[in-house]
Amino acid sequence: MLLLPAIDLMSAQVVRLRQGKADQKTVYSNDPAAFALRWQQEGGHYLHIVDLDAAFTGEQKNLESVRAITRAIQIPCELGGGMRTEAAIERALEAGVSRVVIGTRAAESLEFVEQMAARFGSERIAVGIDAKDGMVSVKGWTELSTLRATDLATRAQDAGAGTIIYTDIATDGMLQGPNFAEMERMLALLRCQLIASGGVSRAEDVHRLAQMQDLYGCIIGKALYDGAVDLRQLAAKI
Image 1 (cartoon, one colour):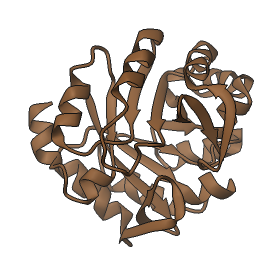
Image 2: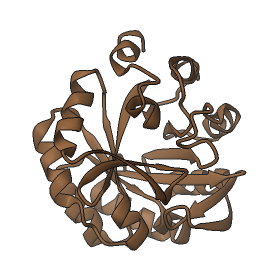
Image 3: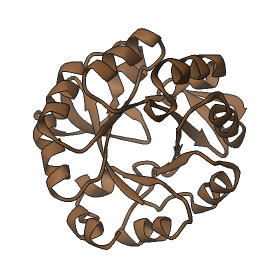
Image 4: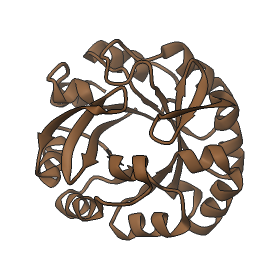
């Protein structure tokens, strides 16, 4: 299982939001590339970057920070946030990321996912599914849809997405542990790569996820930044 340290960008700063709320923001650094280098040196396999400005507004305001990150490190990166047009995806890939994460737009149009997978390749297209109580949330977690997360996951896979990233909003940033039952449900349904996101609070959470057969990766955010888990120690055991 791959370990994916998370870097959330807002106004060119590394931040973390509590349950995705912009008014509950903690700023960790003004140097995203330095943070990325740290996570690589400590054993991260793949970097998960989110452009929060783009997630909330649709405008990509952190591409220079993304470029600085991809130039500074050797491990691959994926970028989510505001991936709602072909041009946005193209700009992200040109900035050096290996994979983009389509969120809101995937919930609105699986045809878009299909077109992007055909244009750029399934391996470069991930669909991010943010859910609460099993229902998909969109637009930076500000709106709850009527679509079931499991339904969107299987449809996105059929549309050509090579990776599904599942985030449980209720657990994200709360350090209460991931939604293991929902991850098991997703794994039973999917053939494509599945990445767990949200809720990791301690090393034991990561080890439990690593025991799940065929789970491709685990995104770790707040627990790293708050020192609740040690990436170097995790990487040595996973």
